[in-house]
Each structure stands twice: as C-alpha cells, then as structure tokens.
Length: 266
Length: 281
Picture 1 (tube, one colour):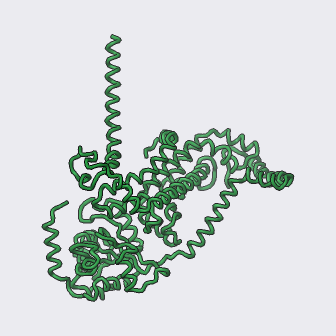
Picture 2 (cartoon, chains in turn yellow, purple):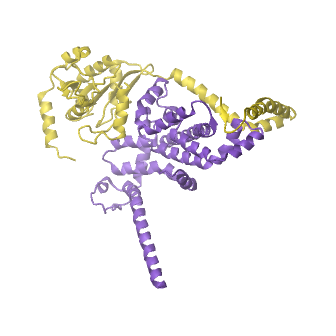
Picture 3 (cartoon, chains in turn red, purple):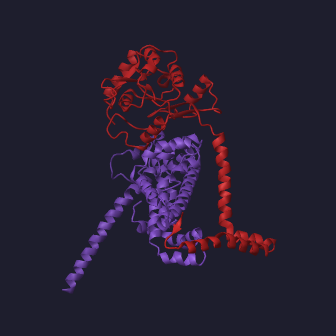
C-alpha cells in the first residue's frame, strides 16, 4: 500500500473519497452546465495536458505496434568490413553485386554490410574507441556474422575468442576445404588453448582486393562465434574467392609482407 | 602602508586575470583551430607548424558547402534534435515521478528498489549495450528514433537527483495540500513538482548534453545514414574524409552549431543547473 509521509489512515481515506467520487461528480456537473463552446473551452483549459499526453501515447502506441509487426528483424547475412579503404557498406557496389549473385530479397530479410568501423587491434589502445565497442556489440549479438580485416589485424583480433575455431568439430568441413588458407591466432584464454587456433581464412587473392579494392595487400575472413548464418557466410566466401579453394598465391603474400615491412610508419 | 596594500591588491588582481586569460585561451584554442582548419586547404591543414594557425592561401568557405552537400546535414540535425527532445522529456518525466516516489512515499520494498537504481549507476554503461541492442533488435526498432531514445527512457542518475530534490522540500507543504483535498498525484503534480524545477532543469541539461555527445549507441542502432545522429555521422566521416582535415573540421563546426544555439538560449539555466547539481558537463 502506498502511504504518504505522516498521514493517518483516516486522512488518506478522506483524500481518496475526494479523489474519485466527489471530484468526478463536481466536474460533470460543471461541464453539463456549460454551453457547447464553453464545454470545449473548459475541457481544453483544464485537461489539455491529458489530451496531448493521451493523444501522444495513442499515436505512439499505434506506430509502435505497426513498426514492430512490419519491421524486418531477420538478416540473410551481416558482414563487417573494419578499416575498409573504400565503400563496402549497404548500397555499395559490393553489396549490390552480392545481392545480384545470391538473389536475396531484402524485403524479406536484411543484408547488412558495415564498413564504418575504424580501430587497430595490433597496437595497445588501438581498440579504445567507440568504433570498437560498436563492433563488439554487433559481433556479440550476432548482428554481424562475419568480419574481414587485414591479416595482422585479424591475427590480433582473433585472440579475443570472438571468431569460430575452425578446427573444432562442427567446422571440420570448412577446415578441410580451406586448410591451405587458414590464419591462426593464440587466444587470450589459456584455458581454451595455449596453441595457435585457426580463426580465419586468408582471402588476399579474392575480389575484395582485386576488384573492389576494399583492402590493400592482405585480407582475412573470419566467422563470429555467435553467427546464426554460417552457411550464408560460406556462400559469401565462395563468392569472393570465385571458386578459388587452393592456397593463397605466394607472390601476393610475399608482396604484402614486403610492403608492410618497407612502408614507413605514419 | 595603504599604497603598499593597494599595489599588492593590484598585482594579485593582474595575476588572477593573467591566469584566467591563459585558461580561457586554452579552452578557446581547439575551437578556433577547428574553425580555422575548416577554412584552409588540405595541404595547409596538414602543415605541422603549430603556429601556422591562420589560412595563408585564402579563406576556403567552400569546404562547408562541400561537406553540407556530401552529407545530409538537415537529416542529421533533425535526428539529433529529436533524440535530444525525446530523451530530455522521457528522462525528466520518469525521473521526477520516480524521484517523488522514492523521496516522499512509503511503500514496501522501497529500499531494495532504490538500491537497484543505485547499482545501475555504479556499473559501466557499456554493460547494458548488448542487452539493450538485443531488445531493440527483437522489437524491430533498429534504425528508428525510438531505438535511439530507448536507453534514455529512464535514468538512474535523474531518479537520484530528483529524489534528493523532493527530500529537501518541507513536509508541511504536502500535508497542507492533503488537508485541502489533494490526492497523491495532485500533491505531486501541483504542489511539489513545480518546486523541483531547478533539479529538473539540471537533469534536462545533463540529458541533452549526454544525448548530443552519445556516439556508441547511435553507431550501433542506426546503420542507415537517414536515421543516424550528428555524432555518429561525424564519426563515420572520419573514415570517408580520413585525409581531408578541412572537410572533417567543417563538418565538426557544423555539428556543434545546435549545441551552441541551445547554450545561447538556455545559458542562465545551464549555469544554474551546474550550480544546483554540482556536476560537470
């Protein structure tokens, strides 16, 4: 029971009576005694806040029900492209071409490509920003199914345990198919493994680099541990590799290593 | 003797003013730098000489036009103002009611509930991001104003601030209202709530500033350019204009305009609000 400060039960019950019955009867009598224009004037003067409030909640309620019943909640796939060098988000050429390739209907489910994420997991403090926090939220909630990044960045990011261990039993097919392309990372969690764990697939020779120039030199694809669309991720992988399942071209890797080593620090 | 005291006083005053001028300079320089960089060419902007602050090759006002055209600033302003408006309204409305309940009413479980409110203040906001995102996502509110406003519908800090405000009011006021026939809601709405105006204004200001500065949440829930806010839009420009500092600074200058306007309009309330709550923005 809600009771105010220092009031007795008698006082409270008296107040309650005043609240409902007397007040309501008095108001009805007052309104009834007025002419039509006076009634409108009186109601608006004394109850405009209630009218506006209830009106707002009515409109909001209708909109809320409409939106929550009609919104597209499910995704076909969500892929994050952190540190992308060109547009790779929704409505980019990559996104359009992928939709054309898969035939996904975006009126039924979303295809999310997120390229506005900038962080550097290779250096201390490189992840202390909102982009990284947003990325973590997206990957932890399964909103983003997969990630593509530069090789050194992926190796550093892979330590967090946020990507599928491709050597684990459910991923055995992926492991076997891409075993010449696997990228390893030693997890922070020593109880999980003290040895390098395969967390990504090197796609440095994929169309992401050769056609769309989203990355330079190297690129690794990894699937999030909370992904609900692993099959769609593999389909994307097939598309970007365009049938290539063998080892990454040695020249590409050598070139990227050389460039990284010879490039001055900026 | 008197002359010596006057000289000491004058020196003290001069030192005080010198100190204040230096402090004001430190505060103003980043803003001046931002605006002046927005008017430079990219080559000038990346000049490392820190004293090369004024544009030498003419004032490039067109940088503002370029950024304005590239990014839909009208939409960004609209989204940001909607976010600020709804967050302030919701925070003040819920906090004032909860503050009254915790500050003036007696009910079972009050201490436990208030402890829950306090616990919410003690943990980092990042902890709530994932559950909140999942909730917004499950009800299909991603990329909407409601999705943006959602974490600000209730505020633990505001509840605490308003509770303190209500506790500070004399009991006699409420008792007199009750004797005159006011029910609990009337006592709250007509008698006590108007007296906590300064606390509500403080809360409104804090909420508005935090809503304006909020970056992470808009970045997560609004992936569409049409629904994002100034802070998130600006952050995304960092990638697009990674090397174009004048464009970035022009965008930053445009982004602070609404807050400057709000500050100019509510300058008195800002100062009073900070004095009331003892906080910093």
